[in-house]
Length: 467
Image (cartoon, rainbow, N blue to C red):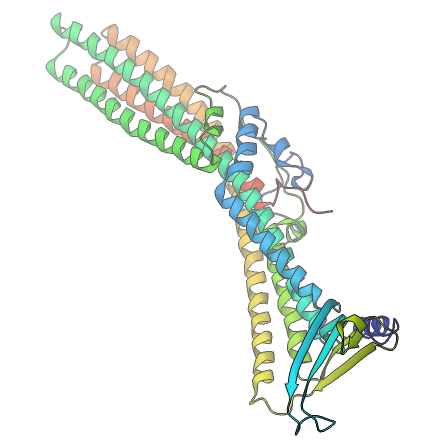
């Protein structure tokens, strides 16, 4: 608001009319297949329309995920990084609008006769009150706008990183809970097997006393008992470590009380997901979107680097009142103003600007490579998850059938041994096979649930899209 009310609108008009020297952005082409190779058999909900609350069907696990989203320290740090990026963008954006300061100053000085305008020694005073325009650059070539655009894209990238952190935490808590469940099912199987083998050892001891079993039979049965005890300690260690990993993700000792001691033997997540079209992955996965925002930021940096070759016009000024006496600041005729435009044109900078442009272009090329690499990694993760869910679904069914067979074989072997038809060695083999098959089935069913969570995360599901 100096030189009347007409100057500020003029400055704003010149600023908005400034051209941009940033290159026209074109999204790099990505080798995206038309269809997923392993997606034909998937009939579940489309991941684009599926949030994590619907994907997780177990109510306890939903509570645990909600607690982790509120308490996890790594996620909290990521969200604070977003706040920093937002503040940085607001600072950069403020440079596009002229500032206005209220200013007041006073000055008293003694002048010798040789420097005084009237040739007499004396003390002079000057008092000023008014509005001041700090140094402001007219953005005729889009340098400030490009810097603002670059900061905006960095902020948007940080938002996508935050969304990726949310999805990753949802997946990590789900997988930690599923791992704990698998460890506890393995622990229950091992305890049951130990009890069964102790009963078998007692039976062999009775038969040995009766003279129908040998010392070798007793030693073999004792060996199986000791093996089960060792397996029990190993499984107990896995269970405790899985519990500790889940508690760490929850981020709060109180939230750990939500972990139940027993849980129903039923699926905890949806048993099928439709992946949708491969092209939709680029529009949904937050890490891909973050990489593209970084690429856009580097593209804007080129505009700022190009603008450095052109003249730079900056304005400063003030408008207010001045007087030799403080009491006369607001008297008639005390109005004062100053207007100081400055033009700067780079003539020689020892190649600084050209090097700056080369650096900006190299950083953009690097961002393109990072963007394409992110897409390739994302597609590999989805392909791996699809392959895992498909093969583990069939493996789980096969191992379920194998468990039914081995249980029946163990029961028959036990009956034949007790009836004296078969020797003890065959009964021991049936016990070993059944335990191995039961443990493998638990592992396969747990791995299939983990693979479903991997697929959900790889497809970018679980957190709402913006607007």
